[in-house]
Length: 162
Image (cartoon, rainbow, N blue to C red; front, side, top):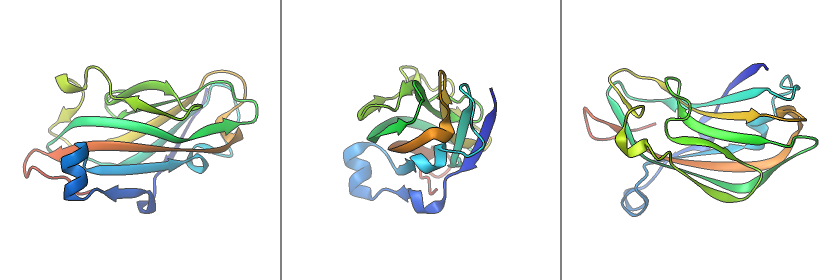
């Protein structure tokens, strides 16, 4: 198993409008196309690709999370590919490992409202971790897209700007 890291570019990060925030309970949208997962060097069956979404403020809390596989991931040879969403402190704090091979809404971790791993007084990176657990490899991904919605709040000011 090897780990590969990449950073989501600003093009794929969108702060939501006030209306979207009120209606959905999220303030930031991250869209990860398959090309961020299909790292050319990630060629073994148990490789992990970590996509850094951005940084939190210094005094933060995440109180709502959801991911939506908008286009099912496809791959030549890969049998199992899951995503987890969290922070560098706890990679599954917001969304626990779930498959990205089917169009679906992925619910937040049942422990998220408890805020055990979703709050801190020091800035950390937000991450989406894709794990290939069987045959094939992340480099074999040929299609797919996932949208991650988070409500990241700067406790000091009550707002978060990515």
